[in-house]
Image (cartoon, rainbow, N blue to C red; front, side, top):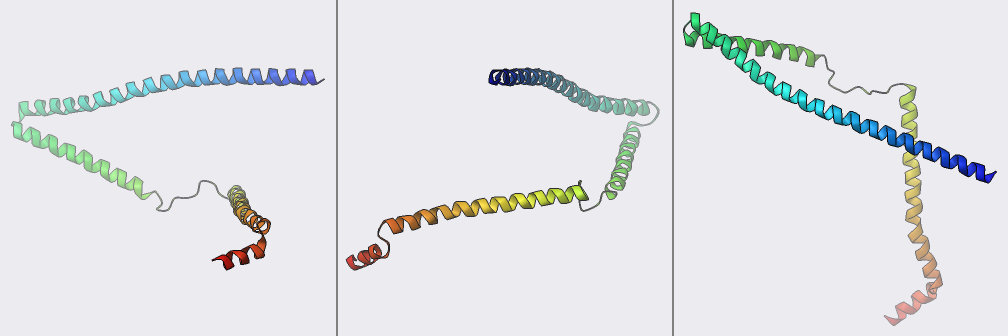
Length: 160
């Protein structure tokens, strides 16, 4: 019977290790694809910034064909500042919707159970610390008694 139990434990352990290895390999592969995709995305974002700059330069050039160059540049500058102002106002309206004090993510009975578990953990840790703090006192007292107690202390005082 014991041999069958050992075999079952070994089989379960082997299957668990195989499953863990397969899962780890799968996660490594997914992570590799995610990292490569992030790199491509960052490159695309950088090229998009340059493309927007060239688009704005092209629009400015086209305006300068019909208007004086200084006027075309001024119009484009004002248009860009107008877009920036609109985005600032939109961002500010969104930030005003955020409460100043963060709200707890867990509420109600689940939060109370968690708080109770934390209090129990703190009290257990404090009891453990008190027990560890008593050990040197107990060993010191035992050493004092084994070393002669009060008579030994009196003899030490007479010698000094």
